[in-house]
Length: 398
Image (cartoon, rainbow, N blue to C red; front, side, top):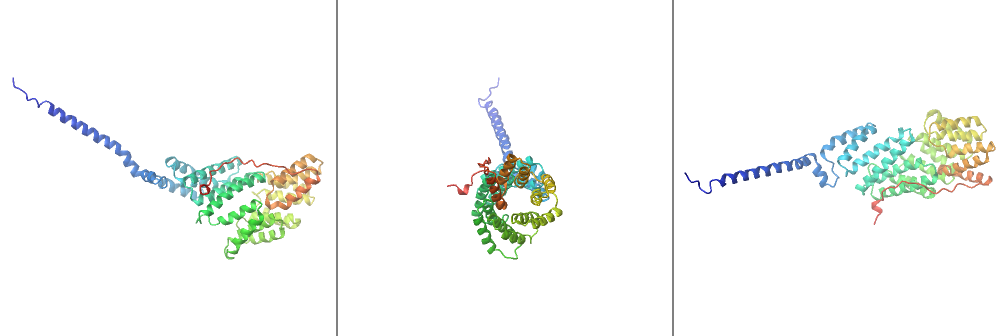
């Protein structure tokens, strides 16, 4: 029998084991490298290393499509695309800002009050998130201001509107502190307007006029300053100056119907009922729908001219074009209730009106307070009940 060397059998077996180990290592490395290659190719590695500031490359076509839809005014169609971007890149502050913009830009055409409120809430949530991710972007504070003002406009009671405006004002001051922006050019004007809304009329007027002094008369945007000036004068009870300023503001057709309405409001409070009626008739003929509160003002004028049927008709018409059932609407109905001998309902409605008119009707508010006093009643005492919470402003924190 032929003898086999001792080393002949183990050697081939050892080689096979090494090859198997090597093959296994290669396969494992390949499997492990695939995600790395994918992450690199899609840009998620760059996204991670940038702290979420640079979007992954594979999201660029989605974002481009979303931006195009927004440029075309198709905000509802852009929202699902921003949802997808946020799902894949939850640290991308820009995506939250863009989605908030979509919700906000849907508001002007929204006729359901519940949906309107929900869009405002969603926009605010997105801006809170964007600011938490990028706390030194001034544009985010400026836009959060606008969302908060939109929410304030939905509040019935003046004290609640002011509470939200104070929060909004803090945001616009933060935007100003962070420096100028190419997208939000008029933050200083917005801050001045806030002061007027907050009944800090002297300060608002002074700031508005200071901005006017450094604005060229050839700059068409100066008409917006004339409007703020008019509102400040009305807030201070200087109604003739308020009318003059509002006339100057109408040189620019931006927000023209609203400016004409304010002019009519100031004329009415000056006791110039026929002039106010003529101004209102003009705007209601030109644009009979939306801004239903214009009909409420005309109803008040008709009531004081003893044309009760026309006043009642305008109250009904106006209620079709606005969600509001307070302020002038409550005041006219309150006066009518008193005429019918319903003292309790009349007082209740006058109290409602006094608590809900804004700074543009400060003269009327004073008159309502006197009417309540003559009836042995007092204005309502309302504690602000704003429930929204917004992220703190990091630049103000120690």
